[in-house]
Image (tube, rainbow, N blue to C red; front, side):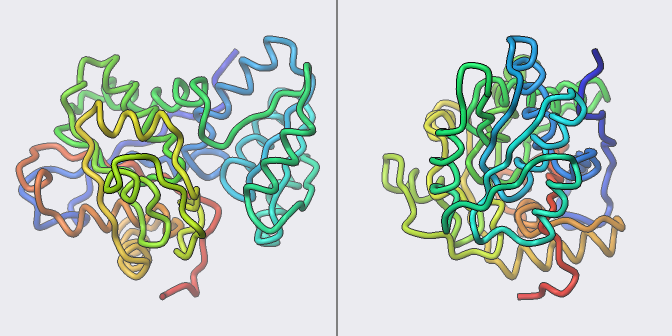
Length: 300
């Protein structure tokens, strides 16, 4: 059967990172049917779970992951329940429900929704984690396969980090293309910087709370594999401000007519800020991860 995700365009940007000497390539994951890169890994995992006998899916996410599971379930003809926290926007709930999924609101934060979703899982009810699953990483790795097929060989990859599923998938993709030496610039916003704080502490750290507006980066603790890969692979952690991320979203809209959420803007902001190793790269790949949390009125 065909993949649930689509192949997305890879376009050169003359405006983003214009002060850098190298070429900047944007992988346009915001154009996935569910609105974000999440559909790659989650669609891959859902198909595998269905092939293994799952008759229902349950997930815990008030954003991109929940929408991706709902979309995958609809495409596969498998019923979906998405457990979301009380902080989930009405718009996100509407989008998930529009895909045919049942939406349950449980708890004040993702941890409570996650715990309830696990209770709903069973032998034939597969729990689809938002980011911490090797099947999801395998699906995300197809992003790098598409870049390789295009003929672009990156000298660095810039991406945003929430729980770290995208980073895990990108590193897997780099390795299977023979690009294990290519550095990854892992970008977070202040207030959602669990990876940066973990690396600084020398051990995984769980944040007390998420205070950034980039709620899609709001995993209080990254996956253990993400932390491990940040030490095995050449990974540089960067933290940008909310304002920088939001301003980058506006630049992306102005220059490329594409509206994304602040979590995506974080990666664009890091490219705009430049510095090493980007200033020495001939080809820079930026993952435009997309997201449902877009707001034209958000400016600070």
